[in-house]
Length: 285
Image (tube, rainbow, N blue to C red; front, side):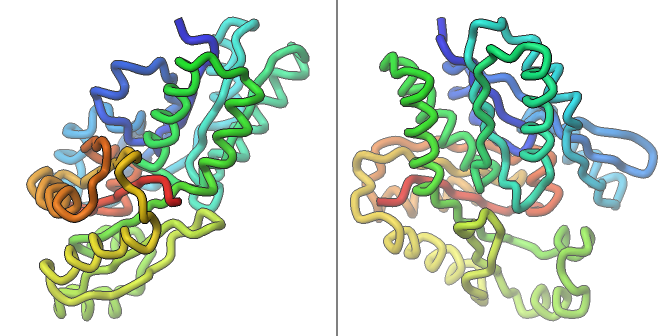
């Protein structure tokens, strides 16, 4: 029985095997199509979502859970159990702010509650990496205070790197100038990106061609860690398991990571990344 309740939001992509072994509650985000609403609970229902996107030819608008959504989720947890809420980057969504507001609503009613809300400054499998770490520490019987201190340190060390296969979703979602996007797609330009210290996404490199992009993407891991052998490595993909597995085996051949997980991207992250997008996360030295 876990002594601390772990929670996250729909911006987290958690591998099925990890989800089975840890007790985590997910507060969904909302995706609004012109004719219906879709809940993003990590990678639950993700294949239905991929089909829907294919048929609709429109990208949904995303909306964070409300403070009341968080309040209700916290309230369900027994009052004596401390809560750690790991939210997707505040640089990408108002989810973190709303999670804090929900916490404050509950504390007005029940001031003895212990709830720590954290801006992870990452998303997708980056949050899974932190949940995995938290769960290991809980099994070591660390206190709530020790765990929160440890996770704040780990957030500073979380490295999340991205490579996109196509810029279509960024263009459709209005996140990339259409003309520039068309030129890049025509020239087969792949964008390499990372989550920076503020939790915003920045382009680190533009590489022409799939093989070169994958090579550069894998090589840059060396910039962040010199000792991967005691580290766990997470990879999430946008509806393209073969691409994820190719990249994973390339990484495995070059870096001796102790452990690795592969998972699908949930609806929220897929909305921005698109088909073939890859995110990798691990702790830097």
